[in-house]
Image (cartoon, helix red, strand yellow):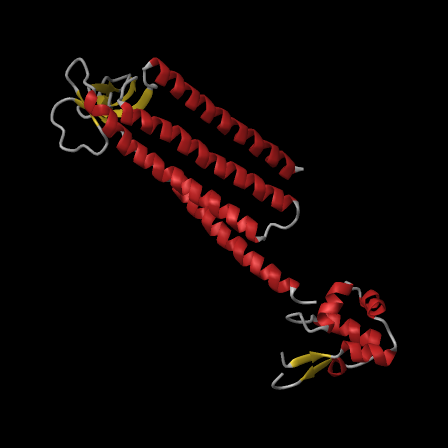
Length: 213
Length: 69
């Protein structure tokens, strides 16, 4: 019963991924037709943020500062190369998540049939693991490459600079892409690949056991 | 393999069919056929015990070691 619910849940997630990818590509095509790029949202960090003193309510003693160092950049800009990057991003991320969800569904189906330790299970677990790792690596590449293509053509009205994550030694007020690299999917992917190896060993043990009468 | 399975010899001596033996010892006919033809990696003590009990013989009557085979 639990596996059936899990199967239905994975099917629902797969449908959501397809819907999200279709909507993203539809928005992209509409924007391509209208000549206006899709909106890009980037988490930014101010290099010289305004500071506000934080006081104790009773005594008024200064105990720290509040730094307004984070910002969000919402722009509709970018040339042809950037648009190709946007389409590739939507397609690649969607396809990788589909790989993950559909492989997980096949794995659940195999477990439900009572034969989890099969070569197919190992193959699907490896697909899931490598897809998660690819998603994590792509998120890093996107964080580094897409701003490199977008930001050189932009300037803030007050004169502050906008810089990609890889920029260094910035003088003066500037906002830099917040490169908080996540390792969560990478670690999950590695764990799933380790699990695939455990399944492979389990399959070998089962085959060994079946060779005895 | 140097280990020869002589279940068919014992079956002939006891005038018993493979199907009857499979039913008596509680393993599938397929597995018993695989055992008979030596196409298994091993035989569990429980299976060997059941075969010896049903055929009224010793493990040495069923298994034989022929060096060089």
